[in-house]
Image (cartoon, rainbow, N blue to C red; front, side, top):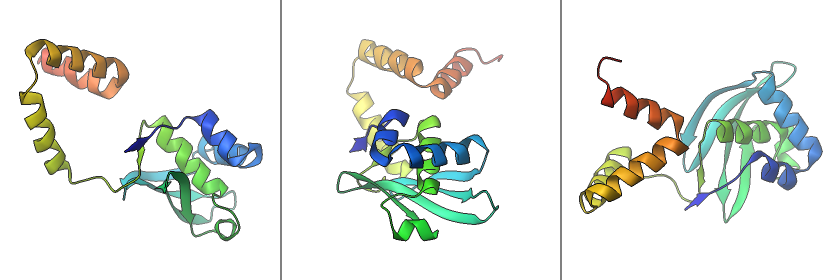
Length: 149
């Protein structure tokens, strides 16, 4: 199950101080190697002293949870590094799930089976809505429609 978050929700969950610290890390380009991992998102974050921290953020039992190898992680549910990764994931359009994501090949097969049961009009409507919601999908759709691009 995907959990829908936005920057305002994250800020209200962690408070203004952690939200500010996380935003500073992100705005100063300190979040690297952002990737989906185990139903959440992992990244490397550099602090202001350029020390590197491995961070994972995900949803556990319905709550946003972070794991970081910094000292702050031992005293609070989320640290500024985890907030930065959360904000970076949101900006990249990554969602958090309560369970690890399944293998991409299995997902593709499952979605292909479901898509095969839809009518042409249902597929066209679904593709159009997804293109509006996802700029990367829209670009790929347009490139398929015009192979000279």
